[in-house]
Length: 314
Ligand SMILES: Nc1ncnc2c1ncn2[C@@H]1O[C@H](COP(=O)(O)OP(=O)(O)OP(=O)(O)O)[C@@H](O)[C@H]1O
Ligand SMILES: [Mg+2]
Figure 1 (cartoon, protein in one colour):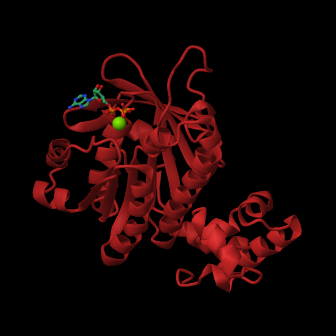
Figure 2 (cartoon, protein in one colour):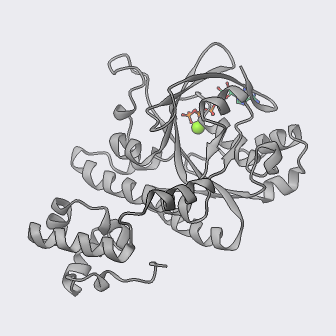
């Protein structure tokens, strides 16, 4: 749709400005449309007024302005849900992980973020009557924790063909944050060639944390994360698919317990995730999921367990 539009097509953007933007990593309309005028002014060396008008023009080209409540309602009617395999958990989510949105699982190490990611990449393949979408998954693995054997166990427990289940998961290992962003771009092509119902990024933030360490690197890191999440959200909407991202937080006693804004990405990740679940360990194999600041669902907690066969009610 708008993918073949160049920066130079934005009214008020000349070759020089476009070049400066590209050098700073802003190479598509969406990234311009979602910038603040202050950011744009600084990066492209423009006046504030000029920046504001460029952003407005980019938004016009993208057609991301208002839509009617009816249009939004029609689109939301297409929204589907994927079961987590735990009724408790599904209930807290309002029926399962939803399409057309980014769902964030955050929690400390061992809180089951990766286990849930595995489970959902199996479950998306189930027929709709069994809580799936009958569609395939993309798994962007940034910590080298995707374990095919685990998929095998979970698929078997669901009575699915193991080889087919594995073949329906498109896995890529991200070696650094730029590579991770590139993989999200490539996911777009996979989505055009395959029937993808779920994209997982486990972990969303780990590579960004190690690539951008210094204080001065906070702003570029947040901008890149924002851009990355924009790519994911666009895919969620254009293909009616679910996106799950994971984010590790430390339960350091010096911090407010589990405060997600203390996690890497902080407000940027929170701002872009429509549904946010805070996961924490309880005794043994028991875990607790809490829905955090959902725009339309009550806060609630679910107890679930991780077993050989996968996720079950706790
Ligand atoms: N087959 C299994 N049976 C029971 N429990 C399991 C099994 N496999 C993994 N687990 C549990 O899952 C936990 C690991 O969870 P997971 O790897 O999903 O954590 P995470 O939230 O992704 O952590 P990190 O932040 O380190 O990535 C283990 O500590 C273990 O308790
Ligand atoms: Mg993990």
